[in-house]
Amino acid sequence: MEEEGESRAGWRKVLALLPRLGLTPGAAMTMLLSLAISTPALLGRESYEVGDARYDLEPGVVETRTVYRLISYIFFHDDLSSLLCSFLIIWYFGGGFEENIGTAKFWFLTPIFSMSSGLLYLALLAVGLNLQANVKVQGFTSVGFAMLSTFTTRSCFSRMPFFGFLVPTKVLPLFFLIIALFIPHAPVLSNVCGILTGVAYGMGLLDFPETMMSRVDHTFPFRLLKRIPIWTYIPASSAERKAAQTRKINPPPGSYPTQQYYMPPQGLGDTYSPYRNAKPGSWPPSTCALGHSPNPMINVFKDPVCMGNHAHLNSCTSALTDEVRIPSVNNLQQVQVQ
Image 1 (cartoon, rainbow, N blue to C red):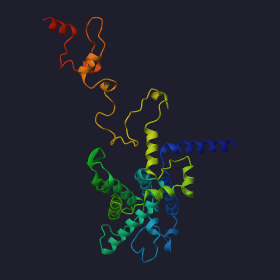
Image 2 (image 1 turned 180 degrees about the vertical axis):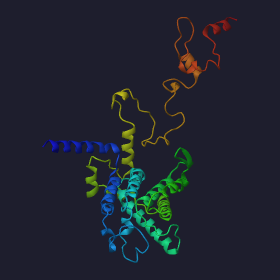
Image 3 (image 1 turned 120 degrees about the vertical axis):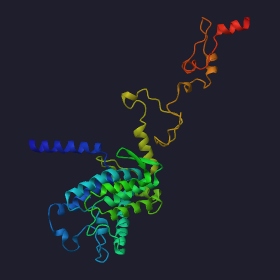
Image 4 (image 1 turned 180 degrees about the horizontal axis):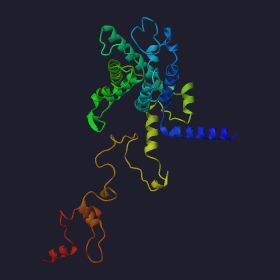
């Protein structure tokens, strides 16, 4: 009984840590599916090599009518190193892509990216273009390149960081091609096909309307995923995603002690973007904007006059006294007497 209680307590701790990882349903389910399909090969069983039981991508898939391998190859791994690389790509690139488009669209676009890049890869092999001979495609790498190139195609940033260096955004996938050379079962030609697929989607092809995805969000499997607390479900509607980001970044006053005197900025748009809303001089406001006139000379004569017949300068005009000499009241009286 004590051992069962300890095991239950251990599982509870593990489940309590899962929400802190920031997993999304699409990325988490892709990892689980990859682990389930790759387990027989990782355990050394040979059943996956008999007849039509292969799951990787190689020439002759269409002739042998094993078209399911156009999708299954992104989940299949026959060694642990390629599985770990796919897990990293799914978590980093797949999770980021899902946060930008929603969980429902992620589930629809992942097989579309897989089939599109796979068919393009087989077509190039049929033409005779083969940079690496006898290489079977396995893993999520080509789909990860499709998601990355989609972001770079639609991004408004001209440069992005790459290991501490700023590089042009449009050529960022080409730099990751160098890193992908060290990933097993990920040929360069397959990754290039993934990049071309992502560029096509980024230019408006292979896309689904947001209204249709919002309706899909209310169907059975996705309604169930919303109720599971171990991950963060990403809605298909862009308005709901922006509202969730606004609640996360701009909490209401008094949410926690460090913001009990927090005053939200006025005049910002409904959507939050740290770059789009960063207008010069809009936030934080200067001290002159807090109830004072932008003209320092007007503020001088609006301030009350002390009993000593001289004017007090406020914080806005004190910074300008080195450049503009403002005559005191006594000097003005002497000028009038003269």
